[in-house]
Amino acid sequence: MERGQGSVDRRKHRRYAVQGAVDMRAAGIEIPLRAFIEDLSLEGCRLDMRVRLKIDHTVRLELPMVHHAPLVVVGRVIHAYGTTVDNIYHYGTRFRSDGEKKRLTLNAAIEQWSAGIGGTLQARVPAEICLSQGGHFQGFALAVTTSRMQLASDRVLPQASRVKVDINLPASHRQDREIVTVDARVLPGVKQQIGAFVHDLELIEPSFSACRQIEGYAARASA
Image (cartoon, rainbow, N blue to C red; front, top):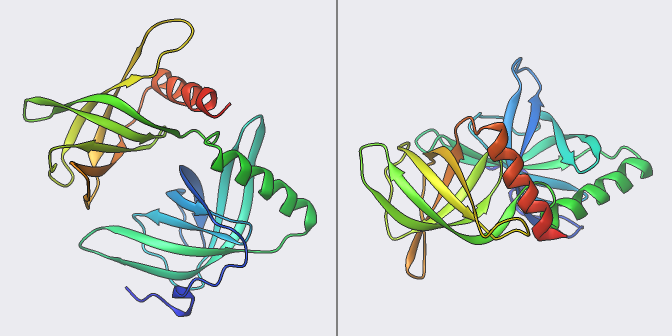
């Protein structure tokens, strides 16, 4: 997949490493789409998704905000890479300039997302992983949102395999621990860190209760 002229990063504004899912629309595609933001700035963001877009493709993103309606930003794809084999495409987008008021609201959204208030629990949380074909083992959830998570363990998991994950959330003032159970699918690719393999997992229809628990702990952790 061609990178395009924007493959050299020329952003003037600081980029913040974030993780979270956003709803989006793309010109010429009728159905709503789902994408994952990897970094965010006043000028644009980096997206991962399963749909192939073209350079200069117009996109419309809805950035969730705490105590506010989602912030809608419009931009265009300036570089892209990925392969049909991986079935994951990576895009750099540049936002359209919509005036000072929108800029201030975007800055507030960036502050929330970079602080983890966007719904990401950034922590090393114990987890037990059950394989669909049987057997279970221990690992750690490194980052958890209501749609995606990173999982570290001593295993290399088969691509597209389905697992059940019991996440042992940090202690709260009400009780010693809280177990959140989610079903997930292993996404393509694996990263190797010291003593562990790290996979990206896509959550499969998490329950309303599980989403509330993840968002609640994410908000408390960033408070």
